[in-house]
Image (cartoon, rainbow, N blue to C red; front, side, top):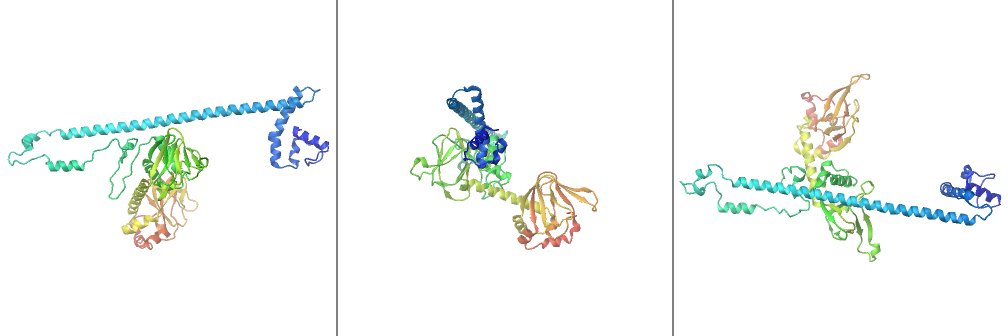
Length: 491
């Protein structure tokens, strides 16, 4: 019988009516029969009973049987309370020390990453300066035989005109067109607008395109920033290419306690991501300083219900800041992404994506007679779809309405002859731009093969309804389908 059960039984035997219980002896198994709430039963079972059992057992062995046990029990309770309190204080102190060590390690890691980035930037600048010196020296070095052919000081002996050398006007024009690089500007860790820091080629810049800057980051910083972005509804559906370009465009802002990132009501044209440290969001309009603190933001790498992004709506539309953001910890690191760079990245990646899809469509025989303007409209109806390895994309004999283009991964076409026949591989799709299921855009008919993903795949999908809506009907496809002997359609 439990101690509490015994005490309750004694109370009932003595005529107590505090608890209503069934007649007879009450043991630990009878606890569920007591007319008390489940919460109280749990409290009795998990908290009260173990404590009372310890107290009774200690009293039986230590208290004097011929004396009133009250004083002993009071002393026992005080000792138990002080012991638990001391242990609690020790745990609090240990926890405080561990948190301080974690913060020290974080600060040390941040300093090392910062030093590594600055060292890499310094090395790149030195290499660039050396390259420019070598190019200047190569230009200044006379070509062998040049002086003899041109005459002294580059004057043609016959005509007396300058040959091989630029005139003063030409020199002035070239000097005016050249802008001397300012190597101290954005020296913190910006690599201007050149992707040199990651060994990328910026490629040709078309007229009207925004040049998105690239700011150097360590691999660990890029990983943390990506993990933050994909937890946001604003960024979770973006392609990996877009995510990486957005990370490239984020600029680091180091803060120390007391530094203000921005004030309430200021123009909001960038979002911020807290990478390390801590900031407070304050409402300065409140008169009481104790009520101004709205939120404390700290890095939350494992919490999927929250992220480290501050004012992410600032990249979507014009607005004013809702709060003042103040740094409260040493070595705090913030990454800013401006609305201008956000829009430029999406515009660039969207155009790149459209160009890629158009290139894929131009390789599909059924689309070759469609005008380019119509193809551009078709691109608007194409959606991305991701499938896992071994997933069935198309089932043989099923009626289909979708056309597929492989963007990433590999698939195979499997064909079964007869109901009892064995499936055999008849085709393999491994290259971006490989396509299947195009006849589904023409009419309802059974699929000729099963298409199965060999690896995780990313597909571009166009259904018949979207195709007809965007182009006004199959038209040219039907015309070409009548001559489909020109190539073999199996899906």
